[in-house]
Length: 329
Image (cartoon, rainbow, N blue to C red; front, side):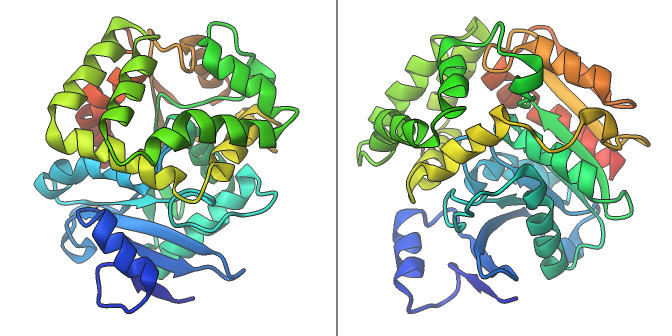
């Protein structure tokens, strides 16, 4: 396996393009045993100086490794390193044909081995949640010590979509019979905006989407728009996620809506391996789905937040989430 870095000198067009497009978010790539490329970015302190185990961050959908940058200041303040990873078909990671949820732990272990992490932690947000659960199912506690899921997605095939916002219900239903249709929908409604050189188009899209949710999400979105760094992270994460097209996003959604390949009751979350965080006001993933998942995940530490929605939970509670995770690493 080999690695390359966009932040180092390189004559390749992709490295040059990356520096010109998102200079504040450098990334590296690893060639996996099957020849695919996986891209990742590191935030915080060098691992040799860290006081905690390395944390791998799983982004939402659509999203990419850049989302992990919201933890930059916390990582420096509390001496840890967090690594954002592009899932297959997002950002700079190769698309993987017919991938399953249970394929992802192999990629994570390959990256952990490459970076020299004998043990590590995981943090998954929204659409990254199912991939945390897959890793907990496949990777023993001798390596995966602790994990957290924030406003995570849970299996719609088993738990249904009651209480979910209309857009997500339509996408979950559509993807069950055509991933191509969802790819087109993603590209038309999100991809075209993400490729617009004027970031205002993305601001407007985020505001319009938040307006469908609770007041907490609307306020969190407005606050993000007022913060230059958080706003840049939001824009560049979405742009980079859809850069190769929307196939990765639609396949992620198909995985969410299909048979996961394992039962939640068989996921080992004993010995403080998992904390679940969910907003009671969430309509992207209704809290009843998290309630049902928590009932099956025997031993999980389940934190319900009465005044939070989907967006606001991440915006307002990310420090609390991280402090809990660091205590378990």
